Image (cartoon, rainbow, N blue to C red):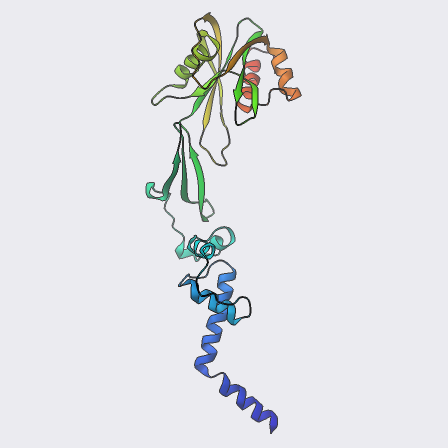
Length: 266
């Protein structure tokens, strides 16, 4: 009899409506833990967590939590989103939010859909493209430049290179940068390849060239360019790559492509 009374008491304490409310709170908290909880209000989420013994609801929602709740689901949460909630249209212009503009580059946050249907936000640096050129002063000698790069912490070895001006062809850019930085005008330019620099976050593409039949012209570097021009054998430039003394990626690949073009590398 005692057990039956005890069971009756439990039923009276958790009536049908109350059971539904508790079950709803538990489901809401589980969804919040998985990152897919529909954000109705910050105070409701805190109350649910307090009911289950996790936190006490503060009188005012913390700023960090407000920012967290305002963010879109990512990663695992995005993958678990209902199929009908995933847009199958490619990213539109409205999905790109400019963050900061610099010297002909722009950082944006873009909401995109991956080939597997996952939706997420990516930070992308939009770049106009660039050209890099290996100048041959003889059959086997080339010019390099030693240039100060603040981001790299000092002077580094490179080949002449620079960004494309609006509407400028890569060949024109290569010839211009060669004259400005190394004081040489090419009589002949050969395209040797092209590279993506860091496709994880930027669309920058650098076009690679080798320059021949050079004519000396006055150098005209930009105000922020501290440059020293060096002449050395192409084989020595390759040795600098293998030793790690020349570690600029675009320059290393430009030299390797140029060496293959002239038959120094198979």
